[in-house]
Length: 57
Image (cartoon, rainbow, N blue to C red; front, top):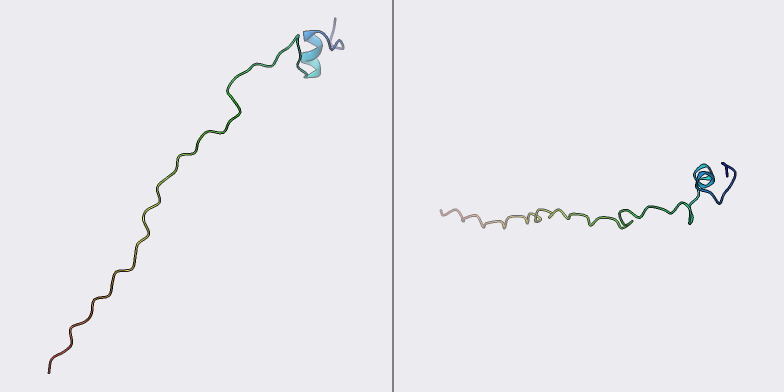
């Protein structure tokens, strides 16, 4: 029951494998977090050009 025994916990730790004797810990799910959407500033529309008053003579 040493490091070479893959059926023991010590052997699984040294080998880096998991199984009945050394189960994986279930932690946080591997789902990416929802990203926070930043509202983009509304696009600036070009100001409507005002008609210049015609010069009176």
